[in-house]
Length: 144
View 1 (spheres, rainbow, N blue to C red):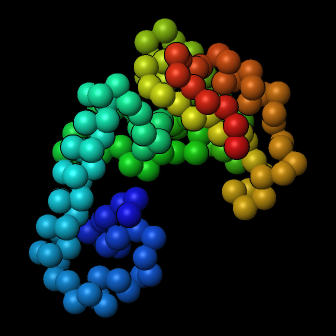
View 2: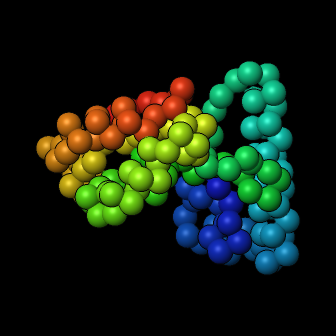
């Protein structure tokens, strides 16, 4: 699974998975903690061997056993994909700096869209491309 949480159990399963399995809160907690530790160890091994995994995209922190990188955002952290004009000036001021976290992380910069369920026609392709070129670091991908 992509995620385990105390509130919802395993992702990509039906909403009653925890109840159907008859798991107690303590058992779910143990599964969540085990999942986080396994995710951390797998990611660390991949990085130690010079590799990469998609879960590390758009991860603005160093992953730990308590905080894993597992839900890659569809665009640069802190940027709205459906309303990139909102907060644009503040976002650009923060992320165009030389020491911006975006310059230090592998980034997937997703194209703006009208709605997540209706991406086409692309509303801001030229602005998205310009923004991507301004804020990207050494490892960055642009697209949909």
